[in-house]
Length: 161
Image 1 (cartoon, rainbow, N blue to C red):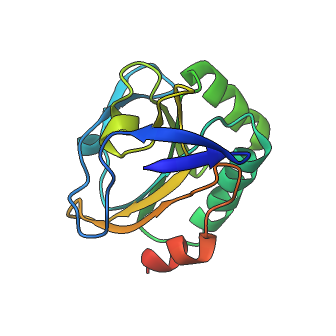
Image 2 (cartoon, rainbow, N blue to C red):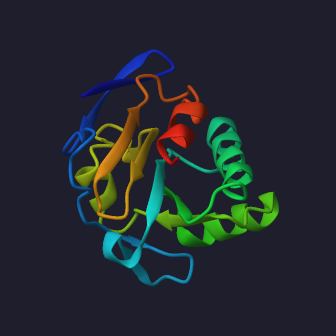
């Protein structure tokens, strides 16, 4: 799959997911440096793949989902990036993010490759949104063609209802 960053083409590696697929397992690193896998998450989940929390669009996206999370019952939201766990924890504290869990894919890149969002040329994750139900079925997917664009918040949130 091809995506662009400021109009420049990039290549995504891994398996592209679609609605109805079973969410693939992955292991990422939590802010406490412990491994977190798909199996450690339960219920309805949103997985946000972002290039870096320290960029304006990623910052805005995670803040928006953090705000919306307080209005949702039984939904967990996870943001994954290649940012180191220390940087993720610092950013969350500075941005008052308390409803979204950040996970780092820096170590094994399993989330990026298993969800088809690993950018070959940059070693970062592309921007994408995945909604996964209680049975690990993917109920919503949005891969953004231009990484600097924001996702469709309304459609992602609608998929949770």
